[in-house]
Length: 174
Image 1 (cartoon, rainbow, N blue to C red):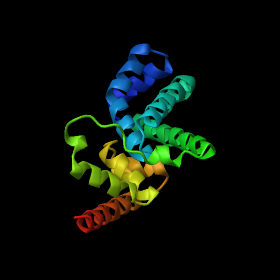
Image 2 (tube, helix red, strand yellow):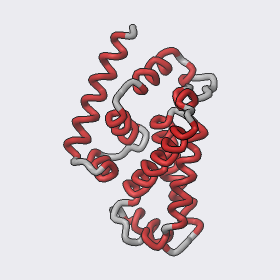
Image 3 (tube, rainbow, N blue to C red):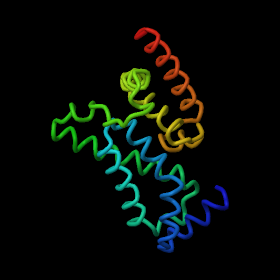
């Protein structure tokens, strides 16, 4: 773990609000992008990230012993997403989860982006998760392995297979 993460972890464990703000500044956007890709819904993604930081505050006494803060945050995100998915299944709102995020004008509104979003949604959950952690979370395969409880080689394989499947899906949709 880098010195910066050690200092942040120590600050979090001590309850330093500045450390929480810095962690949010550093990791919040990547956590949000990853959650949005996994959940397909902005509101649920916001809830998941909020859950991560609430959990971080509640479990601050454990933070000092964390070896990799980034991986710890993404493990927390994965748990938060699991809770949200269970809640959504209970509400039978599968349609809401599949609805594309409300887009603004710009690159997200393009047909290419929409085709890619639909292709990613068609990937198996395991591959979609690895894609999200790699691209949105900017995690290494070792960190992805740690988050998902798999080997780095398995993470790399899932990523490679996901990219191959995306290429096939996008070529078929042309």
